[in-house]
Length: 114
Length: 115
Image (cartoon, rainbow over all chains, first blue to last red; front, top):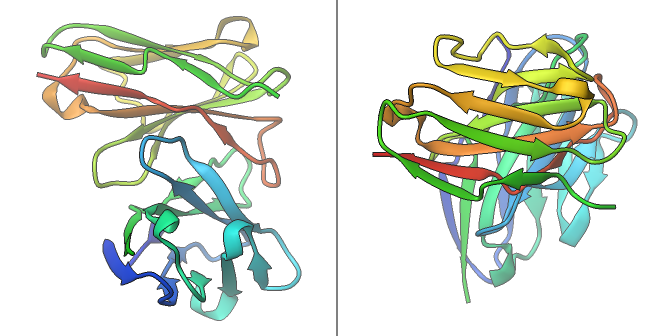
């Protein structure tokens, strides 16, 4: 079965530190890839997505992610985090199979101290 | 555009009781999803509808969970009887259609606590 692995359960950073959250998926075919963010008390929001083309995608709020097909990875990065980035981050995969819905990882909680 | 509406926001019930959640997707969105998010885990798909037909309910515990989407618009998810392990946030999402390339819009969820 397809699955998504997020290696970091809880990450704690100081403001201005750089961020990288790991995401790997298990599916041999073509996929679309997503990162969602959930701020405290809010609903899931799309940060960025990869469908095709340039494997380095840029999203909202200065986030970016790189798709490395050979490693089945889609890591999320931000060069300098802010306190307002404190949230839970979910990697999700949509395999190119008819009718297959988004498959989510377990999430990474990011805590940024000011 | 209006978002995905869910109600209630919170629900506390005793085990073995029944509960129902309601979802109103974005107007025109043909596909509707129910996800279960247990604390500390990512959302897990329970059921996917395309209009009023079921596309995937392979992970729905059918002995206690049921869902319907009459007329292809609103949807209800029911649990009867509830167990302690059903405590979770139940998320509804919708998209224009089934298939890759269509973005999902999520509702705020219903937080269920079973005591």
